[in-house]
Amino acid sequence: MGGDLSSAPVAPVGPADHVRGPEGAPAVVVYGDYECPFCAALELRLGELPVRVAFRHFPVRGSHPRAFPAACAAEAAGRQGAFWEMHDALFADQGRLEDPHLWARAERLGLDLARFEADRRDATVAAQITADFRAGVRAGVPTTPTLFHAGKRHAGRLDEAVFERLANLGV
Image (cartoon, rainbow, N blue to C red; front, side, top):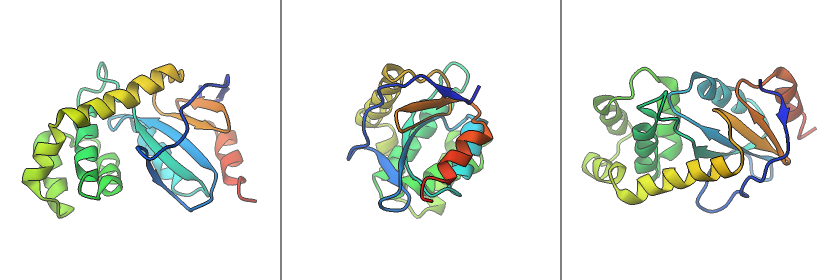
């Protein structure tokens, strides 16, 4: 696993996406799940590369029951301008994704807790995460993480060749 798969029609990065990385850098789209250890490892590696990352939710509820609530927490934090901070905090401590730990993270980030709680339970937040998941299914996401770059889909544990190609994009 982790090699190039056939080309896949992934939706282009748009205003609804959460994006970070250097302006003008090559873009990658990542479908991830906050309970997936391989997603957490990928996030660390991508932070070392000259790429712009668009993250989309792909909670695999069957094997990761806290992934969807964690995605809701990230989106709720995003409504207060702290998506990436919550995103990083969730991946940094995947063993603590229950509500009390989500609230503690929100508090540490200085979020309005009442608003955070209301937003993470908002139907539009759930709909956004579901829309990301369905778009991933349409694009052929078979597992998490799945990364798209330059029309290629890379799924599961990525091999070093993929990281080498991404590291050399700006060279």
